[in-house]
Image (cartoon, rainbow over all chains, first blue to last red):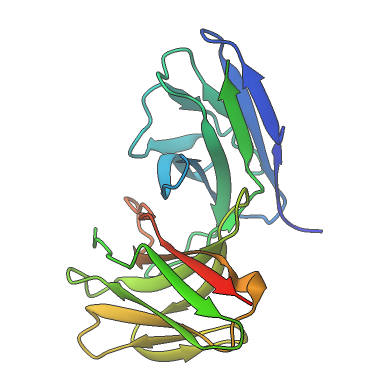
Length: 115
Length: 111
């Protein structure tokens, strides 16, 4: 089955700890994205990557870091510098084609709770 | 990036047609209009996309007037399982592309 997987589904972290959220896709998509969603709100873009070894900051990148060493993988690290990390984190991927809009495919999400 | 405005919530009953309108006054020439659906604790799912006039697929229709400053998502004969949040997005893919998800429209379908 092709798709996007995120792990773990639920994650608990103590204040001051860094934590890494996994995102893997087997859709052969070049672009990958990380979003954050707070209760009752829309999604906000954290980071995105259109090609291996390259990524750009989204609207709320502070306190987060990413890497894109492989096409299939785009892990997100939530650092201790992120003031309010408790949220629902969504990973997505898409093809990259010029001149148009490309559907983003989303993973099931990881719910992070800071204790 | 074009900003979108859509109703915060809507109520409907099973079997009715639901129309959700999105306003995007600053849409650019190369922007597409896309709608996503999100169920609680799940990632959004693509519903439909269009550039102008009308687009129809197996789940919805998208109506876009000539000036493209608004669009309407039409869900025919909704069922309880259509209860979800619906997001209207406007944009195109380029090197600086970013999707902007507003708060969406919460649709509640009642029996």
